[in-house]
Image 1: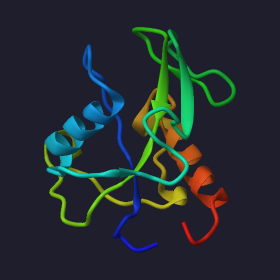
Image 2 (image 1 turned 60 degrees about the horizontal axis):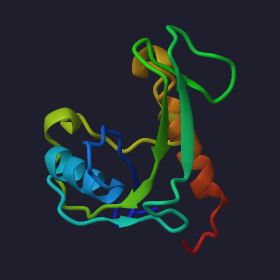
Image 3 (image 1 turned 45 degrees about the vertical axis):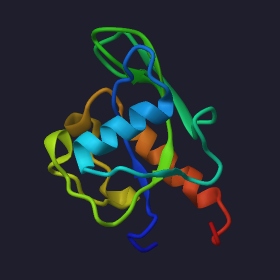
Length: 131
């Protein structure tokens, strides 16, 4: 795929009273200086491509679960399209495009966050090539 309309995996916290779309828009503006986005085919505000369960534990469980030493949580993941003209800043200042083979190990990412990236690649590989 070319960079134009490439899928992008975004993470972040939602604020009280905020919709998913508002939260994504806020994080994109803050971290990549992007004002507009669209959901990737097959996903929307009410249909994440993946939901990961995080257990209040200090180490990972077997399977696709995450872990968090501070809380139990469910984390929905969305694929969106972003324009090429973005400027990584703040928490995303070291942003880079990666392949599935370049997903950092859990010792680098922690909490089994890499599972959402693996799921993103698997979701995209299942789509028809014209998507």
